[in-house]
Length: 400
Image 1 (tube, rainbow, N blue to C red):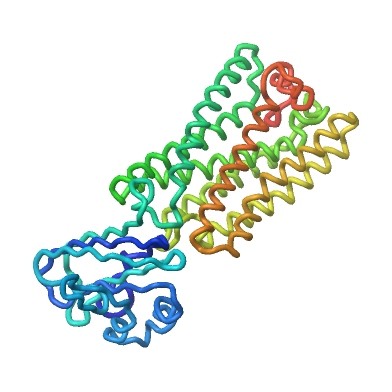
Image 2: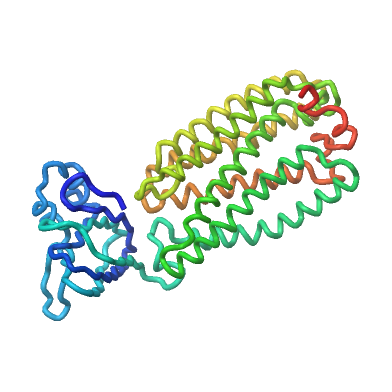
């Protein structure tokens, strides 16, 4: 809970209700008088007004801004928020239909005394198990995570078979190992997010620790693939020199790229640990947006590396491949920042689903593409050399 700076006010968070309405279920147990749940919506005279004038509002003025609710269904009496009586108390508040989804904000307040009560508040949307505990912002994500988890189970098994074939032929190049880590972490992320989602759909609480680990695993997968993309752009296994011992990547470059990847991952770990209550996902925070800026910046370095590798390459078919690889890299690096930017023009409850969905989709396509390039005994080996000879001779670690 976030305690506000004046009075006995505790901010309990936000929830977006479907346009079909919804329900708020409240259970309390207290021996302190005067406590009240105050509700606000996103209309200009409600929550935005509270944020703008909170420092000058008295406690009673704050209460007056609160939405009116029916405290007693039988009498039909209205009150400013929901007053909490002494002892044990239970209330169900029904929300009426609205033209579009409505975001509600809740504060627990007491103008007469402090806050001291045991309580549970459940915000419920219509639609049954798949939807009721989820705010409109999150609805549909559980199905997406479960669907992707199933596809990654099949794809992961195929990749494991391919890796085993390469290992048997002594061709398990570090490119393949990096790709396997990228796929494995993304698969782990989807499984953990699915487990959290299933539990959240059941009890409205979920498995928050697993959700956090899932988000970190997703960032780790992106960091690994970012390193792999830079290595390939630098010419490792993709150019004539990169397929022999003629290509030697400097020690400082390898160390710098590795350190950057660790820093990129740490950025999202710090963001997840310090995430505020109203930040729905990583890109709602300044650190998350900074991560998108870093990703965009790395893309420009990717273009520089790729351009140099293409200029130094003599074989026409490899030059053509590097050109298409640049297009492929542009999609992977820039799709997420561009999607995030465009999402700002949508309704708030559509933004997160679009960004997360696009992020996973494009990242998965990149993993599939890289998997096809490293698949054993295919024509792709003409462009990405992962043979045993390459593994034993030219790698970016020769100077370390």
